[in-house]
Image (tube, rainbow, N blue to C red; front, side):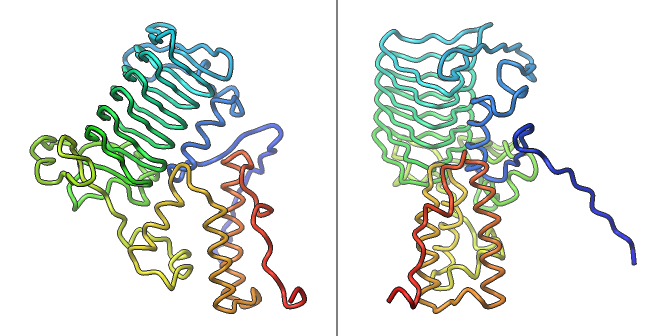
Amino acid sequence: GLQTRIHAHVVNPSEFYAARIVDWATYHAISKDMLRRWCYPIVPDNLYSTTSTPQLYSMSKQYLYKETIHPPKLARSSTIQGPGILGSRVQIEENAVIKASVLGQDVQIGSGAIVEESHLWDHVIVEPTAKISYSVLGKNVLVKRGAVISRGCIIGQGCVIGENVVLPEFTRITLHERDDDPFGDDTFDNDWSDGLGAKQGSNDAADSAQETDIEVVGKDGKGRVWYPSPDDEDSDREGDDDDEDEGDQGMSHLRLQSIGYDLSTHYQKRRERQTEQGDDGFSEEGQQDDGSDMMESEAFVAYTEGSFTFADIPSLPTESDN
């Protein structure tokens, strides 16, 4: 034959770190690994600035990194907890709370606002009393007073979340036109940052006038809800949810890729469906599915610091138990 050879290098986990960002959940997990210095020497205070503006970070207690050339301004009554990063010229006002989050350059956090386990890219503005949990906000996002960004949300560049709006969990907001796919499965295969960007060469204000979902982002908001298409599903997952319609399958896949989703719930429901369908686990198809699950779960365990394992799922009853 062609005598094809596959070369591999086996990494010793006690000496080296290797992981791949494939979705927002792994993006979040690997970011936390880096902040906790599991990837040393690839750590924030040891990296060269790749932007035109020089940046230099220093680490303080709780793995909290602060930019030192243009240091952040923190109000005395604010609460900052690591691991996290505070970029250049970040401003955090009175009584604001920041927990285990990454804040890019020129981010502004209003008084009484709460940001936890989230990633805020450059020039994000969070107005007073707003709350953001387990989410990613692209450049130039504006979260208005009293708004709530629930877990698993992804907010694209330039979007605006209106005053006192409560964004449902795992919502994705974009300024892209409906023909575009900013959050598709290939987002992380190319330049994954484009998934949070506005369409190049377009007039954001004009495009968003027709695309804004007022019932979701508010009358003073800007952006539309992105929904996954059935084509975004992996073929291995399509057979998992035969009792769900295509829309439910897409949302289930989206939740699995999001920050803050409880994987144990997903696998417990899957086990229950297999039990109802009488899957004995010995069929060829069942063995292939189980193998796929094992690989996915083990990879995610590695990315999420071991916070989820198969031991967390109660074993299914057998005939001998009845």
